[in-house]
Image (cartoon, rainbow, N blue to C red):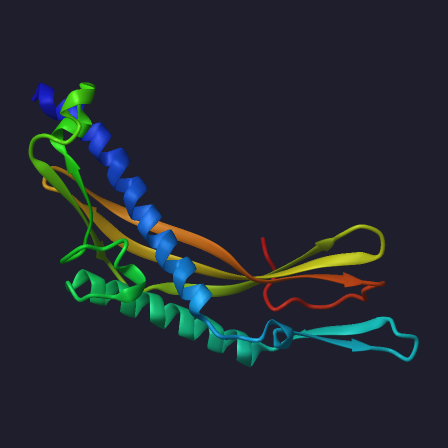
Length: 196
């Protein structure tokens, strides 16, 4: 009982950290692998005086990016959990959904035991499909300018499993697809989706 009190909090902290690190690594790799033209995400129209008269968002293109991203993340996670080798995740998943192993000695305050003892395997299991959303933020930036950012929000629910511990994980990541400064006076416009 005393051993469990010493070990379990350490194991929980390490398991949560490794699960979040693994999912962050995966989402960033998927976004890096996307082939999209950032100039096609936001379309500006100018009036006769050169001022921006309207800003529109290419919703079809944004939805394609969202769909590709969510499908790629979901597919990679399912393959990795099934024990298949996924190039984007070879540094994260080892086999059968294992994301990390922690030696029993590592969980104790005794430094020379760091690599000794039973190795706790930390698993990550998906609970549902990966969800995503496109979000656009706009805010004043300097004098007569606006900063527009298009984000890809990813939400992954899963379960962290070890031999003595199990907990639900709700991972949320917000990755910018484009950050653009719009110079000149910007008229009122409706964003793709208002941020809260």
